[in-house]
Image (cartoon, rainbow, N blue to C red; front, side, top):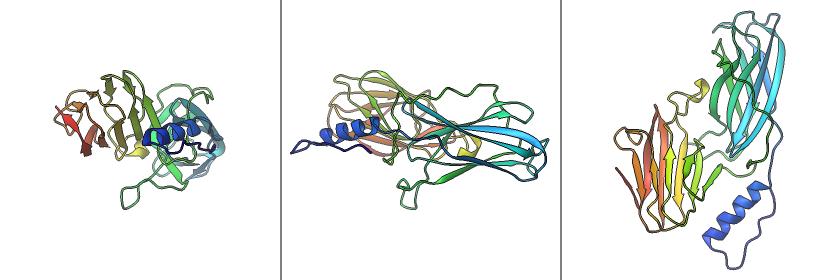
Length: 258
């Protein structure tokens, strides 16, 4: 992590700006990926695990030559990789299996402890390939032109204008100096191991006193509403947890749902 320089005295906005600047100077190496066949045989499989966060795309890969000819629950491959809090992961099968391509999307790289907080230590994530269908897509190229956090608990997306929220877990900070029109896609239903977003948590924060709107498709919030309107006061914050294709809201300060 880069050094964080703050003015004295420092405001909360100064702290946020310094943290974002520090994250922008930080990058990580590709994940260390391993794969273990449940029923060893002689078929070659290659898997690529792609770390994604705020524009960075960093793939890590593994090849095994001892997989089963046909994958099933009894003859699966267990793919394991080390993670960084804040990153989400796509998994591709590029060799082996009945088809290739992306087999899992947006797997979170953190877990939540018993008190609802994000784990602060690195952990490993496992995906079991028992014949998961590939979508025929190709692995994106290595790209670290964006922001990759290796020391912070959450990834951060800064929205200085209208636009879309592109992360499924972490913090979204609205800094536009007038009312921003922001969109939020519905999360993917299902467990992370199956490519879903269930359990992912977003916190959306306004740092400016304007009536920003964050709009989902119909009934995206709590299965009943789809527009979150921030009051033109500070603080204005809303949190939401993904479950079964909807965002369920929790802590809410000066935000109205309609």
